[in-house]
Image (tube, rainbow, N blue to C red; front, side, top):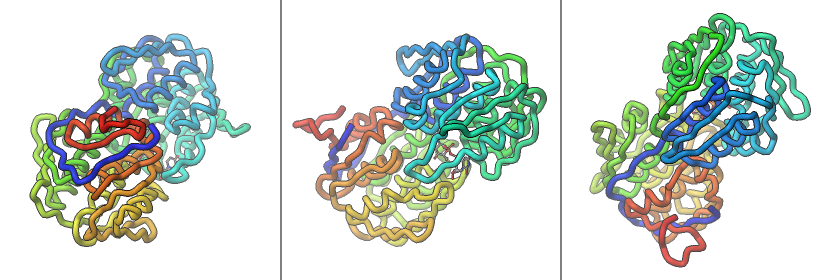
Amino acid sequence: MGKINIAGAKTLEGKVRIGGAKNASLPILAATLLAESKNTIKEVPPLKDVLTICEVLKQLGCSVEFGENGEIDVDSSELTEVEASDELVRQMRASFLVIGPLLARMKKARIPLPGGCAIGSRPIDLHLKGFAALGADIKFNHGFVEATCDDLIGDRVYLDFPSVGATENLMMAATRAKGETVIENAAEEPEVVDLANFLNKLGAKVVGAGTDTIKIEGVKELSGTEHTVIPDRIEAGTFMAAAAISRGDVLIENVISEHVKPVMRKMEEMGVSVTESDGNVRIKSKGRQLKPVKLKTLPYPGYPTDMQPQMVSLLSTVPGESIVTETVFENRFRHVEELKRMNANIIVQGNSAIINGASSLLGAPIKATDLRAGASLVLAGLVAEGTTQVHDMYHLERGYYGFMDKLSKLGAEIWKDHENIKKVL
Ligand code: UD1
């Protein structure tokens, strides 16, 4: 997907169904390495990132089969490799999640350093500190992390920051360690809980996921299971923002409302009508006067960093001064420069964006710099005057399945560059 076009000033109406969570699917697929048999994972979104982790699993010796409706069978009975290729790990940082399961099962792993990222430096020190605490020997060699151990031995690990990836990687490593591992200051994100539920179905003994202290009692072996991943709270939040920015009325289906509570509450504070009912959330901003707000991104249950760019776009259309502070990642305001091309009035000072939303957005050629930035620019395009062209939309393929199609069914006019007529993917 190169460039897409959005004809602005459209109101979104109707209903949209949310798919399975990318960020739950990736660690769960990595965790299939722990079970020495076949696993069936359901509701996995067929995204680029999912295909990448499946390629990594195949490199390690798993057989991976794609069924219908997002079902993936992974048979990890026999692993033949402990090394993932640089090419795949560079494509997606989350490939690094295989190191924990490999250490637990094979007692060694050789994984390329994931390197930098458009939204900040994103180090892996907490992952490695945790493996070392469990007795692994960690070396850096020719751009690879080489981790080895005789046996992993359970211990207490305090994370300096509640990193989602480090919590997941350590939790997986600890499932087959000797004795008890306690992860303190653990991430509490719903995706961590979904992974813990999957691990427990495999036969692991994980308690406390969803709190800041997770205890894992190591077991000798784990065996395959079936699991359905949770709905994607960031996809849900993105459609909530799309409904709100277009001053529309949209029913968002297949949502665990608890997971999107920080986004719902912020929208209510802005004056958006938010109604929860039985797995659905209805967002209505049609005919309502929205108010500016202050918000700060935080680890869960705080406001999610992955919903920050979309909210910056929304607040650029709300009269008055809003302040958005990013505390999870450095350098996560790259969408702001693009929004300014669309006439948004935003100043970045340190880790805050000061948004004066009085001006109306104007369609312009702009560029997606990462996945969520790309989504935020599409949302801005929905409401801008004239046509917006968003370049480098391949970022969106990593995280949203059928995004254009879903928006189009809600009334957006959105089309790929090479299409002569305005039709959807
Ligand atoms: C996951 C999500 C990503 C989301 C992020 C925060 C997946 C696949 N990705 O990413 O979409 O934006 O959580 O909610 O689930 N850090 C360290 N040292 C480490 C690890 C992390 O300093 O060893 C720092 C990072 O630089 C960052 C912060 O911790 O500033 C949060 O990162 P982390 O929670 O680890 O994010 P990811 O797991 O990479």
